[in-house]
Length: 459
Image 1 (tube, one colour):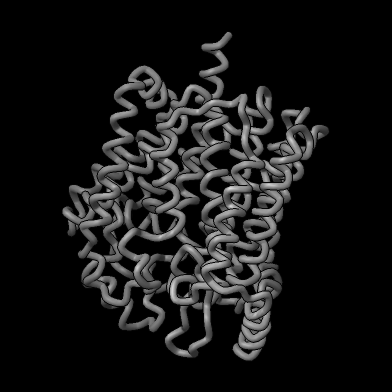
Image 2: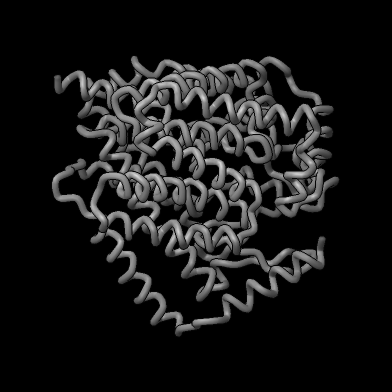
């Protein structure tokens, strides 16, 4: 297995060494290319508010790295760093949060309508706030909850726009046009920022705008699917200019998937792509039963893989060992650790203090999450939090399927992000603050509701 991975890395390095330009020339070429993508995707008939730049900057940070982390591509190597933070990062995020809240105050009626119509989201965030009380690290939990509140505020800014459907299209286009090409640029021409090395084998890994291959994987997953969604809608009915722009982004995302070697994200991308292709086909979109049939098919596949023990075949086909790179052993150990079963350790408080020090002394790869979103939620928020996540996702499924009756494009995106979030959280934890998959899930859950509200107001 190690020899195969080294061989793959040698092949990848040989590809990276080809077609080399001076970094300054490459930077100018990529900058021109990014401007070209924006030009091709222009839509003079659609107007979105200037306030959309606030969640755009938030999403750019969530999909890459904090401002203070751009000096060097390093990961946290000490548990004490969890308690520390950068004043620059706090200032930037606080400024964006304040700007978003100011926009929502101006849009008072629309903001109130969002909260009334999205009770599952509101309940989950309210419970997260309440869980700060029983956290052993209340100050840290409160800081992290304010960042989580920022996720909600940014989602509300997007979906209270006069045209929420256009706003979500523009949001994903802006972030995809920036994050995906810049990742390619950093991987090929700026290795100090775009690459890292395994401390034990010194084999390279590629992170692009993010830190680590798994982070680059979910960046390509979310924004690659968003561009594929735009590509397919433009293919069926839309300007060919957008077809070219988003086709280029999808191609870059596929190349980054190969370089990153992130199996979970790639598997979820394949799953999401299949759903998008089917649900954007006119023949499928005309029937309201399509999302139910597709979801049932996925459930049957999951039954076969999990209950009939066919999972090992799929895991080995993705180039991974049957313990999912040590995840199953970690899950067993985490389940044996003492945690309050109903309420958990408190909002994002499990991986702090003595618990994380003990785990890091056992695992050389220093886990910072449970690598399972449902287990992670249980550890932090208990069974109550897990139930609220289930309630939120059930509401998202209901909204996405209902959207097929009025706007199949909106419904296809919502259903895709919902299913991808369900699958991704089996081996990674994405129900987390400032995680692109979590933000995409919130957007997909509430988008159909706010789109119907706008249609009702226009009628």
